[in-house]
Length: 186
Image (cartoon, rainbow, N blue to C red; front, side, top):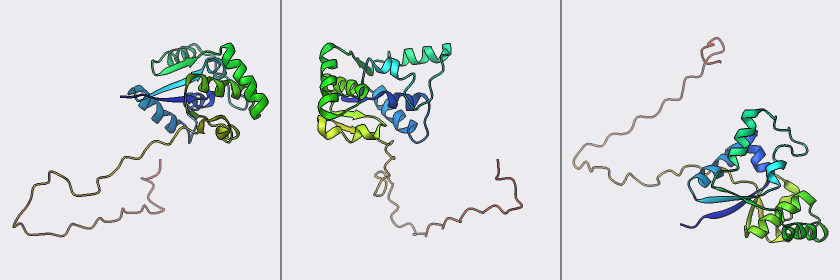
């Protein structure tokens, strides 16, 4: 089984840690696939510090329990940390000069390129628009796939030859609570 490589920007990790509405479910879905060994999440060594405080986001509080949780999280075998080597830094510099990418974002993009990753996941809309310029698919972590429903009859359903056919009962609509019925309210 081949493992899919995906790069995560710091803001994807922060969305997960801070349980950001509209984002945490997508992050959890990717992490679940990573835990199953289907995805290897690559990120820059910069992320280890940047994830604590990203401009415009609430800073993760420095309590001992959260510190341990963050430190241990990045030690998971499904997360690979790309070092910021001289080669990565020089590529990042060129991305700033040639592609107009912000310096920290350029370090992340250069880290993805150096690691051989082609899918870069972020919640940075301006950076998403630069994907074609740098040869990466830059997108948000995808939404959790919906379970598929079977399209045909059950495969192992016993045949009922000669049995009379009956019409299924129609489902009754749920009873709407009246304005005076308080039992449905929290």
